[in-house]
Amino acid sequence: MESRHLTLLRELRDRGSVAAVAATTWRTPSAVSQQLRTAERDLGVRLVEPDGRGLRLTDEGRVLAEAALDVETALARAQARLDEFRDRLAGEVRVAALPSAIEYLAPRLLTGLRDVPIDVRLDDVDVAEEDFVGLADDYDVVIGHTVRAVPQRRRGLAIEEVVREPLDIVIPVDHRWATRRSIAPDEAIGEPWVATPPGYPFRRLLERIERAAGRPAEVVQEVRDNRVVEALVAAGVGIALLPRFTTRPNPAVRLLRLRDVDSARLVLAMARRDRAERAAVRRVIQELIAIGAGLGAGSRE
Image 1 (cartoon, rainbow, N blue to C red):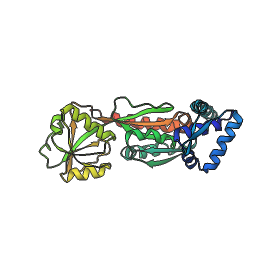
Image 2 (cartoon, one colour):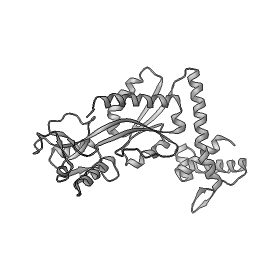
Image 3 (spheres, rainbow, N blue to C red):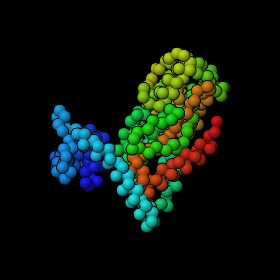
Image 4 (cartoon, one colour):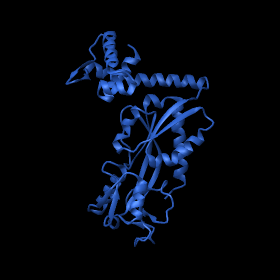
């Protein structure tokens, strides 16, 4: 039994099709199919079966796919220990992150690792909350966020809290609340809102405000980009939620604290368990946690 066969089965389980596996692993679909046949011949069991126009794992294939991550994690852990013994903390680490977090994390991360031979490759992504975990199949570290008190877990995924970041209500500078410092949910719900689309953490927080106030918000615009949100608020289109760490001073808007509702997001670092064992990946995650601790200490409410 070869580990590459197990990895192939895990990829097929996670990605759902031979074509998707081929595209991700830079192989042709015929090459992937040939490797599956080779694995079946070597293991002496049928691993895949027809499913419409594609293939799906058999029960035996699913058993082996489930075991793949344990094998991959053990191999990565052994390699990490060897690298540490030989003092070889190096390598490329691919990081995908939501823009509103990478804006304050990335400069500090790259500066902190300047003298370490780790090549961090950044990619900014903005997807719905549930879609961040899927990115861990393609990146070494994924920086996502949630407004849940406890982040959702996925088997085979290591998740670390980086920082708890307050989300504030942003209003135009000439709003009638401009001299106030905080606002209650039943007051905020009566205003028109500029919100993210459903499924995004900031929208989930708005839904929490709606429940606290006992009535729905009037959402007049749905946009993802925080800079666009800020511009619309400044123009008087509505009020919104923005993250405290990356909302720069702007004379056209004011930030207010939200009372009586847990109005913070958790910024998370996620990695597949086998990748999280790599020494370079561990170092990147440790650096992110240290950065988050410093940011959190400076923003205690």
